Length: 250
Image (cartoon, rainbow, N blue to C red; front, side):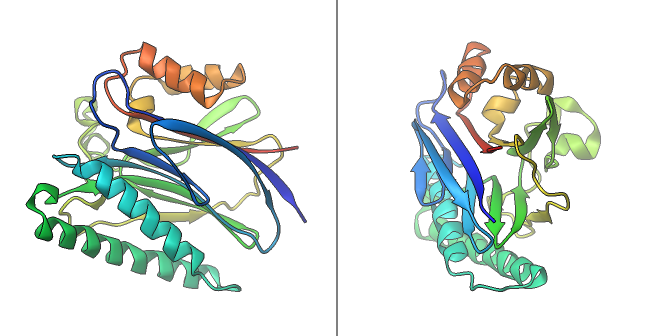
C-alpha cells in the first residue's frame, strides 16, 4: 500500500534576531533561511524522518546545537534495521538521546563558547507502516483534520508546571542545554492518519505570535508555510520562525 505525502517547510530568521538557530530536516534535506517542497511516496517498508529543532546558546551555539542534533538523529534513524518491534525502536531512540546529550556536552567542554548549548526537538518518524512523534522542549506538533487544529505535543515549559503564562518561554527540558535529566517523549499514532490530514511542526517563533485559533483560521484558508511565516512576521517576528506542513494526499 502506498501513501503520498506532500511536505513543505520554511525557516526564517525573523525581524529581530541576527542569526537563525532554527532548522528543519525533511528526509536528508536541511532547511534554514529558506524553504523546501517535496513529495514522498510511503510504502509499508518506508523509513522517513521529518524534524524541527530550535537551538539555544550564546555565540551562535544554538544554530550548531540544532544542526548537530538533527544530523545525528537522521544518521541514527538511517541505521535502524528492518523489522524492529515498537519497543526496540523506542530503546534505539532513548539510547540516541543519551548519545546526543553527551555529544553536545563534550562539544561544550571543548569550546567554551558552546558551553550549555542545546535545542528543542519535535519530529515525525515513519517506520514500516507505523507513525511516531517525538518531542523535547516547546516546539510543537499539531494535527489539522476536518478544519480543526489540535496540538498533539505538550510543551515542556515552566508555565505547564506552575500555570503562570508569563513563564511559557522558560523550558524545563531540551536536548543538551547542560541538562543531565533531558528526556524525549515518543508516541505512536494509535489512529491512522487519514487522507487530507495535515501535520504541522513549528518552533515557538510561530506559536508564540499566533494563537491556535489564528493558525487554524489560516489553515482553513489553505495557507502555505510562507503564509504562516508571514503572519508571524507581521505579528512582530521577534524570534526565528520555522514551520513544516506534512499533508496526506487523498
